[in-house]
Length: 97
View (cartoon, rainbow, N blue to C red):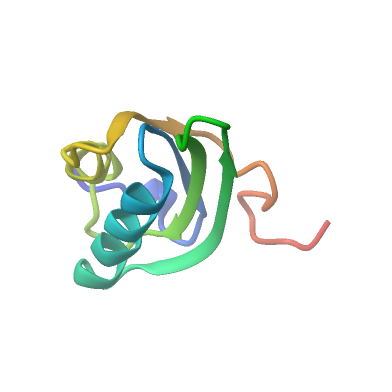
């Protein structure tokens, strides 16, 4: 299902990783592979080498954000991937705060 209502809006995915660097490189490679525009990337590591990663993208008009979540979640270094709405650091209308 296309997400035309979200076109032009930042969509943020929150991933929990068991291996911070492997997960970050896999997510960033997917963003490049799918031709997406990255708007934000934040990673907070834990002492065991895991991390919480927030990845904000600008989806394409014909992009299904739930399918992207499933694609991101297939990586073995990720324990979970969820969609966060709206972006914590960017308003949905794109206006500066």
